[in-house]
Length: 349
Image 1 (cartoon, rainbow, N blue to C red):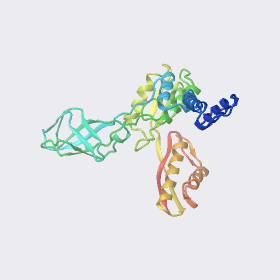
Image 2 (image 1 turned 120 degrees about the vertical axis):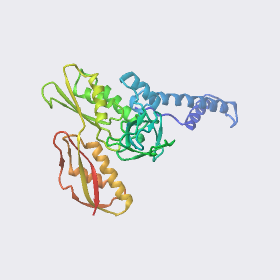
Image 3 (image 1 turned 90 degrees about the vertical axis):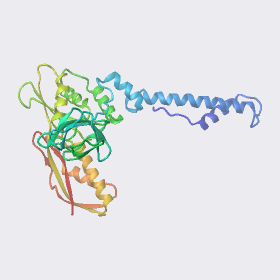
């Protein structure tokens, strides 16, 4: 039976009635007994509050952040995953021989600052320079082609640099309570088993930024293990080469020595939709897109199937939608090994 905390008024009534029932004479409204009853009820109410706090935090799935961290610290190899800064290369242009000093600070269009990691010299009109974000979080990731501006101009160098083809990646937010709880429950319900399938999944999820992972034993032969994963909180859920290498290095240090490990990014297969919705408003369209994106986040997996009935259900539950027609897709969407359905675009008919 769940713990139910009595209200202060309930406690006052209960204690006052208990006191009066034991007195042989009628009490005045402002009698000492009335005062004692209220004071005792107040103290009891505080104790009940503490009991409620204990009841909440003694169980993993209702624990507050502080106590969830403590439970995770007991059960998990890595407690709450910290935020990480993005890193990568950017391209400067300028006069040959001009030096861009190490520690030069640049800022993105949304105000995130980055710092160059080494001195770089312009040659053939360009210089490729490694940078790291000065703050942490998913908002530090940048796509290829985005611009950064020097905070302090360097003579002979363009004040605007361009993110190279690999982007600035591996930035991630601190793990929130829901994700930490999911990892904690997975650890308790599926304990380590010397390299079982779920061990590889749990290991992958211990790498900051990884949100979903899949394991394919024997895909490449006897004693082989293939791991695929995505990063749902990044601009692209498909990991780049650096993020794949980070997961490989982490799992490689933990795997059984007899296993041959391969970590690869799933191949995205964009799913496009053609939908007519009623009412035909921007709010309803945004709600439909949100539901479809959430569906793919829940159900898409390498070599998995997205059922047409689930797509239709997602559209139907969108806030404000009263009716719709859909001409694409017209059947279940099934992928071959290694391919994963990603959100493409919606054509509104």
